[in-house]
Image (cartoon, rainbow, N blue to C red; front, top):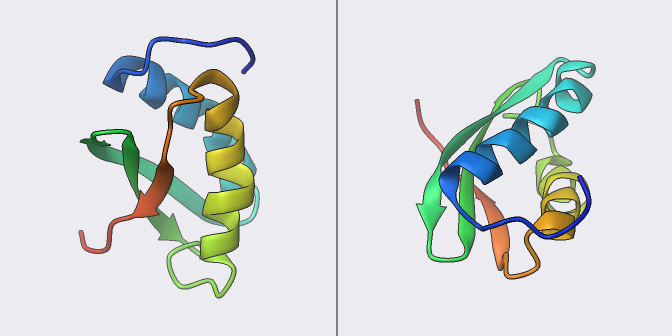
Length: 82
């Protein structure tokens, strides 16, 4: 993902779909939950949900990748629950 895109649900979902295989390779997964202003809400699943490095995964993998297309992104946050 490179180049700026409009910051909307469809584009963010598409960006997350490109990241998913990386997490799935390690037994985890990621699900788009919603947008709250400039914050992307996701749910980490599988081995990612209980991983001690989940915060690092969000910041250094998911957030960094999404920020390439969405510079206005404030942060990516993990929403707990089903």
